[in-house]
Length: 161
Image (tube, rainbow, N blue to C red; front, side, top):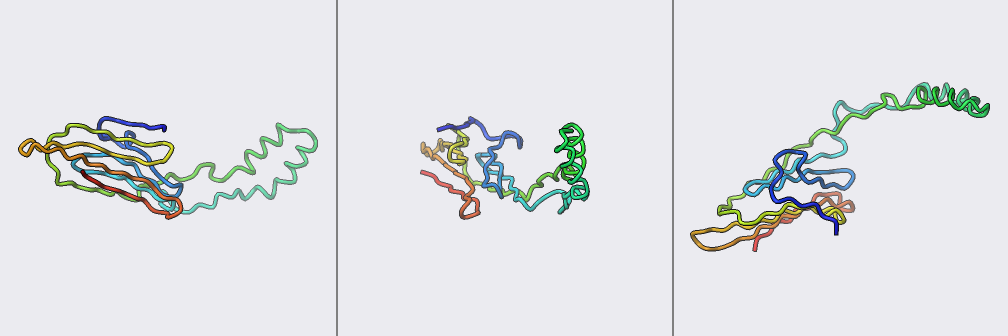
């Protein structure tokens, strides 16, 4: 089992655990008293829909074929770079769909913590134990997150002993 694990919650986006199903995704921060999931979905883009088809492709295709047939690979490559490349040559970046925030009414002293991502299963987990010193009780909290491709949804499981 390949696993990334950390002994503290993510402080910034780059430290959060990524999960997704190819169409939707989230970054799991793994907080103790609160949780943040930053979610995105494939239709949320900066800008809007862009037709990336190069209008010069059909016009220059016969010339490119002729150059290739005549062994003029360098000239054909140069023309392909301009006439066949997508226009514009980059895509707009994803934008955040939003944040899912949870606040937990737990209190106690944190006595253990692990935030992980099982790479083989694409499951992000957060597990920690809080000790209520006045009662002498330990409660272990576990949260698991993953995206289902067949069900096209995010699944969350929260548990405590």
